Image (cartoon, rainbow, N blue to C red; front, side, top):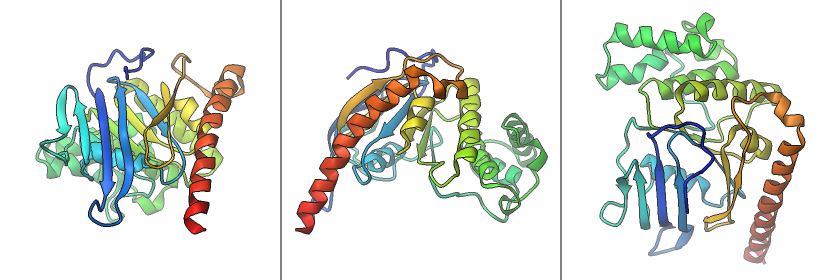
Length: 284
């Protein structure tokens, strides 16, 4: 399966190759196959959106890339080097791949600036003062200059989530792994977060692997939308989003956007029906 031919980034960092990957949980017992013979090529600097029914195995795939879960078969490479494969089922965790989950993970006892600076200081990459200067500069770029010295509980959920993205990017990772980071937000806050993420992407061109259930979010942000099958997960359909960047919310009212959303919705609905019917059979 080829990488995205429409990628506009020109970035040579962060190319992910997923080849014939399977994951079986508890092979000696329940034997749940979460991912089955999944292959996908993601270009460096691509925004790759992953959609599919709940529980289909999307997060399992993200966790394998991050090094949180092992794989049972296949191989995952980053920039041509193996992360995990037959001889090494669990990838090493590293600063080249950073995860932002749905639930916030900022330290509540540290200011936003201290949260952002924490990683480089702990890893010995930067001294405390240098890390703070870089953190404040990056928070300024993200529109958080007025709240850098406030604690997470003193700012809005959107501001806190922006700070998490900044914290993820301070070590200049190759890949940003996002697992439904905006799911619990109201529509207005989510729209602001989308604009903020696109601004970050336009500056950094970091490869983004983004799991979502929001199909409009997927089309608005992505270069491609990968529709996964119901469990076990494999690629069902790839929707190319041939819409130029930078993007803004005028895109949402365009016919081109609506057509892409409907195309994606149809593919996801087919798999959601299969997932529902499988659940009904299990309960019968």
